[in-house]
Length: 364
Image 1 (cartoon, rainbow, N blue to C red):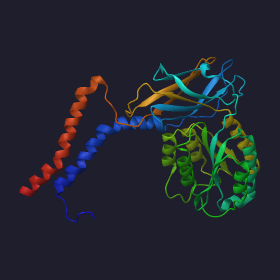
Image 2 (image 1 turned 90 degrees about the vertical axis):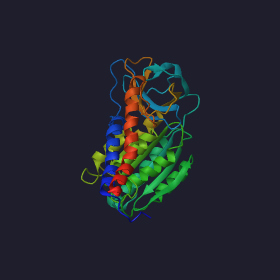
Image 3 (image 1 turned 135 degrees about the vertical axis):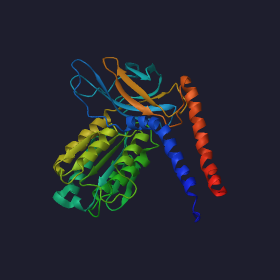
Image 4 (image 1 turned 90 degrees about the horizontal axis):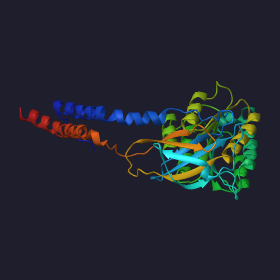
């Protein structure tokens, strides 16, 4: 229980002033990293430059630090995907220094490379309009046919509740059956459902993605919102492809776009259920064209810094770039040591100031 006795006014003011001053010293550094993480980047594949192969980074994860995992696509000059590039065709750098690739997976090798996907599906009451739920069921069936063999799929459904309807499985018939049994009912807990999917995929390795469909604004989430969902996706380097079904009046299209672009994925809009099938097939093709690699950082200290990473193909003139934030305490550069010590001294004074002020007031 909280104490009922009031602290002296001087002591309370000092206690409040300390954290404010502390925040003024620390937040500029933290905010710089946060801005770099939160700025949306348009992940839509752009037309390749004439005569040049283009690399597009779609995700990066520091979950296994000092190992860093990166997902990316490679487009030919004609806009089609290059599927059989080799490890030695790429140059990977962190902070401008070339790093050794420990693991590498191309879309097409001697064996088909599977993908791990969570389908987040809306079955709220509005999905009964215009047979949207029927369109979703047909689209998922087509999507499953286009996925690489051996891919693992899970389903998270949401309305007024969020449920894992199907855990990860390679049994496509099981996934289809679960989706076919959906009935429209209830409200819309979109962000809670995406957070559940992120939690499921957090420990998975290799090519991973979330496909999240909704036909309306989030009206009932209890645990998450847009900002929290973006932050959670970035922590695990997860692309979240968003699909808005219906008119602009019905869906929060700007929020869905921001969630997708901030996580290096893409937003798709379907005006009606008939368009869903083509969109799901396009996403399946894109996921099947994804590369993944793992390298080990030369700087193994988790120091709270944002580290630029680039990947270039042997035939591309420009490298694809991203930045991976490594959580941890910010370590000052060697030239900052006097300033760092001064900050520590100020913090030490702030730590004892409230109790000193309280004793002064009590002695009067």
